[in-house]
Length: 305
Image 1: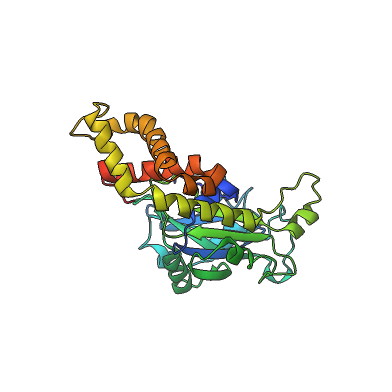
Image 2: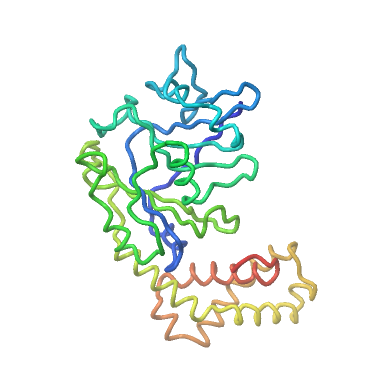
């Protein structure tokens, strides 16, 4: 059976924060210091197949410190209706853990499910329901609700449900889940300072300053107040009238639009909204371009804006 690798969760950077907007549905979970492990029901054998991050596990020489045995102890028949689900979780007990959780040895905490047929990750509400219905432990979740601010997100740093030290948190944007139009990650991790101290690395990366994230969020909101759908639509019509794109524009014209539109919108905003552009400052160029192209894709391709 083919192994499905879990997504590479990237550390939060200032630029990654741009796709987390007020009102987006988010989930904040504890980052557990264990080993990524998963399983899937095999229709041909009627058994559960266990995986580490990079290998298919077996009872002879690779059990991932007992994870293979744990999966084989489950009732495979309970999962026969879900052959397309790859259930991901964090296994406690592998030797590579830096934080030791004495009360959680040889336990597995489900945090995601991937549907290989639909090629999508399930919403966390579905993941939690699946885990509970099948007697599996679901990862500690601090918050489910609308994104408020990065200050609010950072307030969940520091306290662990599993031990004295928290490795960090995972922030999942459920509104952007599986969105093919976003180039930014919809899941990010924030690692705590105490965890860095335990690792004793001299080059440990600092936690992103939430004030800087809020500055970016405010700049993006201001940008969207002047780079509007109407302004983009008007500029596209000008490009049509200038012969840059055809009247019956379509997907093949997007390359030309991407080359021409952002700079035209930028110059129009400088001309018509100079005070706002000045207030936005250094962020305006990037946000102007991304917002303009978001609306262009919506107008030309019908993608959600």
